[in-house]
Every structure is written in structure tokens, then in C-alpha cells.
Length: 208
Ligand code: CTP
View 1: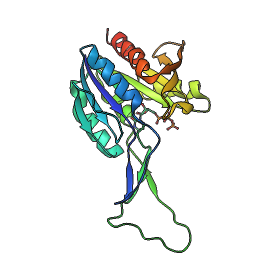
View 2 (view 1 turned 180 degrees about the horizontal axis):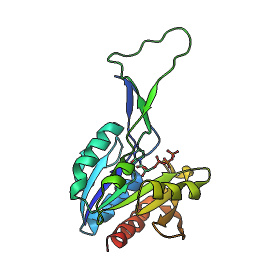
View 3 (view 1 turned 90 degrees about the vertical axis):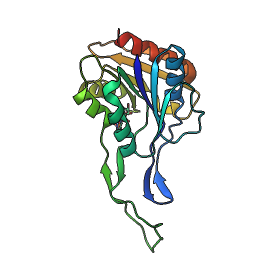
View 4 (view 1 turned 120 degrees about the vertical axis):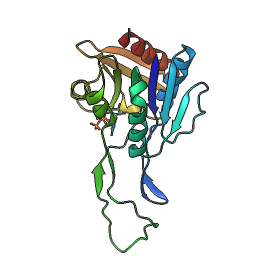
């Protein structure tokens, strides 16, 4: 299979030295990439800034912002059988990036942010019948309800619900819901490296 994996956080610059990001370390996506390569799949890994070794045997594309990631994913998508979208893509980006370092002024400051493209939702609109999409959700309220709504709204084939406590940790508990199913598969407190096996099993079964 040709598998596209996104991983890590994105970075939304405010000025040349400051940016908004999140605590994603990329472990989950890199674990999926290692496992997919080990099984002989052709892997494209599109990664935000992380401190992980680049896996051997992948086509590696390094990106910084949500806009960069959107551009790279849309460029690669037509040749792909399955997308595994583990990246923690920023939902908002500063409306203006200052060319110069912002100098502090007396009093508070306000930052105007605008929405980024929802990459997965876009893929859900343009995919063909044989292309499969696996999304991730990170929720701490009404988690299953929200994740299952995202599965429908973004036209995904499966969604992996992560625990908020998993961000940056080595272990994770995940729950998987497939399209047209009511049954959540629960995988408890497993090292992220091994969760790569579960996710690639899922990708293979979707493309069967
Ligand atoms: N995603 C994306 N493009 C974005 C934001 C998110 O493709 N601009 C993808 C992520 O890679 C992930 C899934 O969408 O696979 C997460 O969905 P999202 O709607 O952002 O949900 P949560 O982050 O779980 O929650 P919230 O609704 O609070 O943003």
C-alpha cells in the first residue's frame, strides 16, 4: 500500500522569533511510519518540527506551519491508498505575521487569529472510493460523541480517539471507531511504539 502519514505539531509564527504550537511530540506518527515500512508499504511521512530520528525507507517531507502541511498533503494525496493523520495541526493561525520582532508596548496586546484549512475534511471531500482516511481526535469532554461526529462530518473511514493525558507521554490508551460501526475497540495503556502495529493493522484492514 501507499500510505501517507502526518506527524507532530505545526508552528504558527507571530513574528520572526515567536510562534504558537502544541505539545505533540510526533511519537505516534513516527511509530506508524516505522511499522508501515517494516511491513513493506510505501510510506510518505509529512512531519512538523519534532526531535525524533527520521525513519529509514520513507519519503520524508518536513513542514512547519498548518498551511505548509496542507500544501504538502494535497500535493501527495492523489497517489495514496491510505492517510493516517496523526499530526496535531493548528486550528488557528495569526492573521498577520510581523516582518519584524514585535516590540512590547505598555498594556496588554491582542492577537487576531484566523482558521486554518481542515486538511482531513478537505481530503474527505475529494477522496475516491478506494482511498481510506484515518483521523485522530483528542478530546477531554464528550469524547466518543465528538469523535464519532468528526468521523461522519469529515467523511473518514476510522477515527482514533486519544486520551488528552497521552500528549508527550510514551504510553497511550486509544479507542478506535470504524465507519458504519457502533463498537469502539479499546487498546489500553500501550507503548506508542506498539500502537503503531494496531494502527497499521487498521489501515491494512480498511484497504482489504
Ligand atoms: N486536522 C486537520 N487539519 C486541521 C486540524 C486538524 O487535518 N486544520 C486533523 C488532525 O490531524 C486529526 C483530526 O483532524 O486527525 C483532529 O480533528 P479536530 O477537528 O482538530 O479535532 P480535535 O483536535 O480532536 O478537537 P477540536 O474539535 O477541539 O479541535
